[in-house]
Length: 444
Image 1 (cartoon, rainbow, N blue to C red):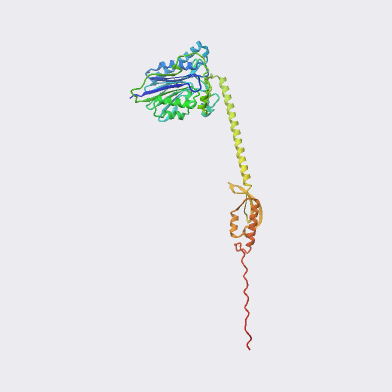
Image 2: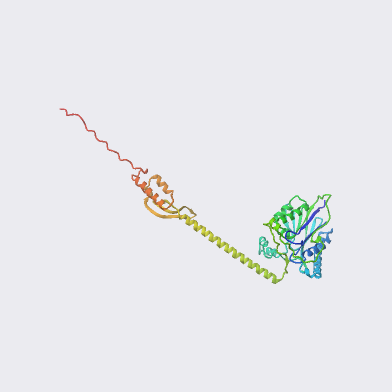
């Protein structure tokens, strides 16, 4: 049985923006998402023009490569239409849009992509990003200059390197042909989803038993729960062999492409209301920096690379300062710990003599934490057996005066054991027995 597809599309303006500059489409064969550049007047117009032109290729093709060529041609045609619209409406100068689209042809799909909207594939529990973002920070990540975590907070994370619009007469579009199989779940989304919802959350939603429509609704809801500072558009396409009889095959257009075109500039943001702040005090409550296109000129890249070097230098300085601070703290802890040990005393054996030691009995590897503070004339061998063993095992003292008192008690014990029997108790001297005097008179 040939693989079929079930799909759904949904788009939401988000909690911050005033208008929806996203557009989406889910048809019989074509699935697409476009994200208008929010920093320019007419981002909604650009995405709407793109989707309306691209959806004209929602039809069956003899091969995936034919579909790939048709999809690429449709994006180039959309780019020309946007340029012509700007020529007629000068107030829209600079508008543009990203596009991620795919056409199913049998057991394959043809993909066309430009910008930072994304296509994901969920297969056998694994989520994989199929498209590559055409952004400046992604270029830095690919070149190893920064990490993906650093890219998420980079000051130029909103710079797009490739878009459809009047900014480039011949934009470079990525295309590819890939195999599909029953059980696949494909996701197309604007960066309003991928930038604010962790991939693990996306994977978890796609792994659920919900149908395509329920999954799109869940993903949008989770984004709204995270504050949804940007427009968010989601298209989900399931590849299956079991198609219910009541499936609605009608094409769905969402976002700005589903509304009449208006050629009026918009601020692109709406005022923050008190309920939004109260309901989402820990969420994003301000609009993200607007995406915008910047040309790939040598001077531009030289400036960006210089800035990136300055950022790396600042990062190294920060790490150095942090390392020095950590070393200072460690030295301080060691110093204070050593001082604490030197406030303690105990009595022990220093060779053959009894002595007062300053410090603690423990050591750290070869380092001893105590030393002889005061020696005495008392010999360990002069002590009674039971005290002699105590001294060898050391006797703790609460203070220096207490240690000296212990020495005096030991000296007294040694004196009392002067006979050397080892008990500490003097042996009594035996009393001599008197010789008895004989009695009786003389015998004559």
